Length: 254
Image (cartoon, rainbow, N blue to C red):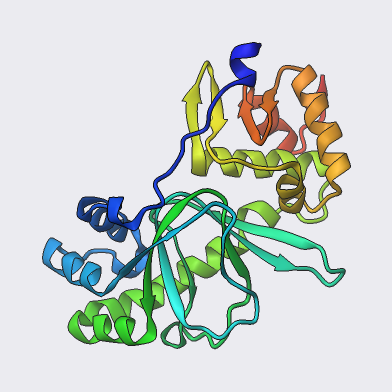
């Protein structure tokens, strides 16, 4: 058990100078806005991007700020949050290399509808309105891909973590953990380690519940052997049980 208590998470690179050209091209290739571009066109996109390094926990922009930048995650992890009507922060998405976020007038947005901050050290590729407009002029197919990309972004923002709104907490939390496993899970000691540092408050924001309730449920699942957990990390040991919980199967707790 000591081995698990001391399990380190991967430490991403924040230094933009360490975000190599190969890494930048590779992540741009994953972005729906730039889907189908050849190597020359991807290199052109990269020429317009500005690499920026961020420390863990550093804000990138705030909800309500004027739309000014589009970002692509090159290394590290970023969280998007919104304030609910009662003032509580709700975590709406977790972004990893290849994901894009932000807002630009070219994408039909005038203000940021969420707040973004890093969960880990991160290197982001930033594009402002002038640079993005230049890309669309130089590579006309990006303008078409932008329409598809916005649709992808909307679908992403409306799915996963909050798709079980109104369901019991155990369903919501199991669903959130499985979403994270799909995005940032890696094999580890016979389990799936969620390779980002997550506090109980952040998990509670994902599940739309009180931190104390989430902590009690995680402790229960740990005793049952379905997960293992330590300070700011979780590993899923029995994903089948969590899928049963997420899907509301009656015998999931047996």
